[in-house]
Image 1: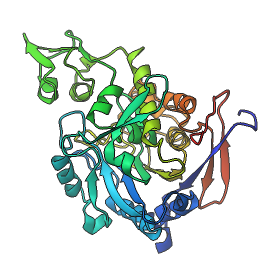
Image 2: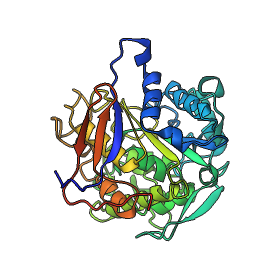
Image 3: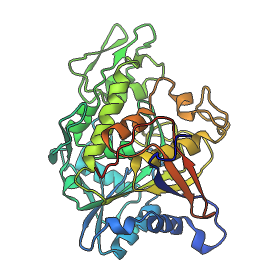
Length: 394
C-alpha cells in the first residue's frame, strides 16, 4: 500500500443480487449514475453521446440494450438529448461502414423502441467525419477523433469489460481509444505489423479471406503478409487457429498500448468534467465483442461499476476479475486461481497494465481507487506502490 497522499479516484460498485423490483439491473445502473455524480456531467440541452459497442454480428455477449435504456433515461431526466454512438471498424465485418453498422445495431436490439435514443455512427458513412485534437503527448501531437464525438457536449461511456488478444483486456480506456477513433485514427494506434510463421501455417486461407487491405497472399499453400500493405488491424491474428500469425510482442505491443491510451486522452480532452463511465462486468469473455462469436466467460459474473475516472474504473474491474477463480472449461492455459491474472492466462504476451501506468503518465486518470459498494455502504482503498499520478483536470 502506498502512502496516504496517493490520489485515489472513487469507483462505485453494484453487485448482481436482487430480491425486490428496486434491485433489478436497470435500477442498479440508475443508482450508479446517481452515486457517481453523473448528473453534473450532463447539462440541460446537451447533445450527449452514449458511447458503446453494438457488438459484431455473431457476438451475443455485447451490452444489453435494456441497460443502455437506463442510462438514456437518466440523461433525459437531466434535460440532455442522448444519442447512441460508435465508430466504424478498421477490419472488414458487419460494422465496417455506417450503413452496415447501423443495421447490426438494430439487429442486436438497440433501436429507438428499446433504448429511446437515436443511433448516430460518429465518423459517418465511410469514416471520413474526422476532427484533429491536439494532445502533445509522447507519441502524438494531435489525434484524430470521430467528428460527432468531439461535437457532443457531454458523454456517457458504457463498456463491456472483457479480454482482448492484443490489449490483454478492454474496458473504458479501450472504448475511448479505438471506439472514438475513425479508421485513420485506429490505424495510427495499430503501429504493429503482423507476420506469418511458415512452419506453423497450414494454408487454410482464413487470413487471406478477412484481410481488408489484401495484404495477404497465398503461395505454395502458405500465407504471406506484405508489411507495406498491412495496417495492423489484427483480423488475421484473430482468425488464425494454428497461431501462425504473430508480431514482436517485446516491442510492438508496448507502443501499441501507449498509443491507445493517448488516443483515449484525446477522445475526452474537450469534455472536462462532462464524461461518466460505466463498466459492465458480466460475460467476461476472452475476446472483444468485435469478433463474430462469443466464447465461454472466464469467471463468474460480478456486477456493474461506475466512475468519472476511466483508469481507476478499469483498474477496479481488472482486480475484481483476477480475484475470482476461473470458470471450469474457460479458455485459460494458466492463471486459473483467485489472485492470478486471468487475461495473461488467455493472452500471455500482452501488456494490459500499461493502460494504468501510461494512463497516469498522460493525465487520463489514476491507478489507485476507492471502491464503494452501493449495497454495503462500505469502501476499500487500493493504491499501488510508487505510481505517478496526474489528474485529467490539469
